[in-house]
Amino acid sequence: MKFSQPLIPATLLRRYKRFLADALLDDGTEVTAHCANPGSMMGLKDDGLRIWLEPNDDPKKKLKYGWRLVDHQNGHMTGVDTSVPNRALRAALMAHEVPELADYVTVRPEVKYGQNSRIDFLLTDTDKPDLYVEVKSVTLLRTPTMAEFPDSVTTRGTKHLAELTEMVRQGHRALMFYLVQRTDAEFVTLADDIDPTYATAFDQAVDAGVEVMAYDCQISPEEISLGKPLPFRR
Image (cartoon, rainbow, N blue to C red; front, side, top):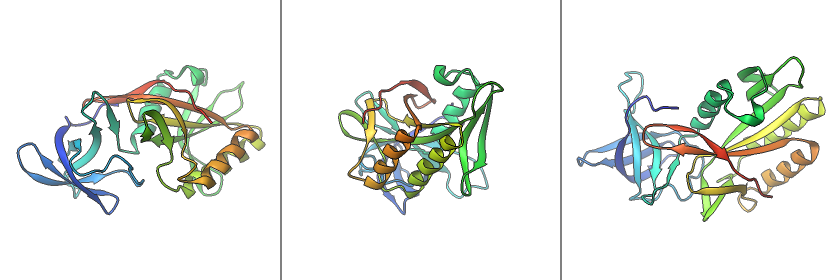
């Protein structure tokens, strides 16, 4: 997924009201950017971090910048826009670039299911059970190489696990897909201490037959794309 505009480097001044961030451009201009991330962004919102912003000239948008990346300045980056995983995975699915899922013919995004929900992707084929795929963006890393989900309590995420479980009970396949928007993670696990309710729901879902998969991303100021599979440890 290529960014629509070349990203601009900046220094983070503050993140506030969840969806706003003030930043200082290299020319000394202070700007306010949209932060497309409702989570806690633990470890990614410290004042003084090097970040990358995407400018826009859309007259319908109040803010002319969107915060896209954190540059850890050690050769690694993290993507902070939670809409990116769905777009990156959709591109990979449509191109049949996810080997584990490449034998499904049809990929449909945002299909209604469950209790007033929409599944991120519904994969179908004439000779296979339908596959319901829910995608989560993973950005938390408190221990070197260990990515964790979630970074805050996620009632919505717990609801999704219950709905995936119900799809399995109805005879379908269901997959929880964790897309790690970091280049410094080697495996993925759950942050039980942050949301024990989610962790319990996850274990119950897996016991019921919900499948789990994790991938990392290739990240640069030009694009974010699906990377390689990562082990999920529990």
